[in-house]
Length: 406
Image (cartoon, rainbow, N blue to C red; front, side):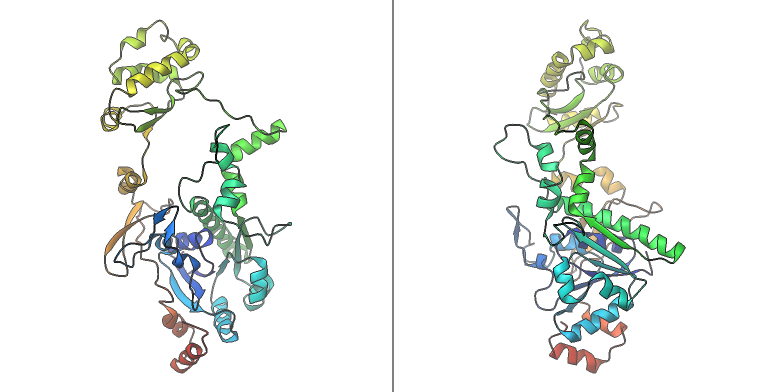
């Protein structure tokens, strides 16, 4: 993406995450923030019951994740002088990226037709909660509402009879997936422009991303013509396979098994756990019998798994052909050996000069690790960006006095 300039007029995570991915890929991403308040996400201090600020340092992970690698300019878009600057940025950009609602875009003069009048070749990208057509075009949404609740994931993970809907497993869960989706759409639009000379409007909604994530179930429901019944899965294993699902260890951790061919993997599993007798047990000595007696076999597997702690099982299962995974918490994911080996956890130097770590977007080119740079401080690059646009020192001072830039 080197040589591509992205102008981002957006806040929070959903659309800014797309800008971060493009910055990872080499694009020059200029983030427009309000001249006084900046990105509203900068004001968050607690989220999901957690402190999100690092004590005694400037490092702010919920801003760093979706904003690393960008440059920030502070513009008061309600002022005519600031709009002059924005228009010049639009003229010099390849992509205009926003998540402002239509009524806000219209008020600020940054609707599709406004942007295209300034730069007919620019790719316009709009992230939304519920799409750019229909009754809900002006309805705001976060990933908890548009992606998780409306998109089907919340219902899909909540057991029948539950007293509450289960929440997302992480903050910005749908936002991060949506940002990756937008980045892919932008890449396709840039390819189209490069090969045909034609520009595009790219629209991605959190609801659409949510439906795509649950498409397996949605497609089955559409075929059936009704809501799918809730799964009443057995406590251990599945109805026909004891080597499916999660099992608890003696220290209350979990391992996930996904050995879809029980006849193939049962002998190996029994050998690894030291229960070779189960291979020739007349209840389980063929694939047909394993499937017929799966619930009984699953109870035995559960007893075996509860006999040792998590770390012992992880070490014991290394190299096993059967598919399994340790169920990891966020700290363990951040230190996962395969993520680290593949450059998916990267070092970044924060504004204080301290070494920090961030998760890298999952796309890698040419087996080369991404080199991350930190997210910008609020309006950190205003002077540099305005100088690049050819504004004189005197004009820069005038804009600051007018309150148009920060």
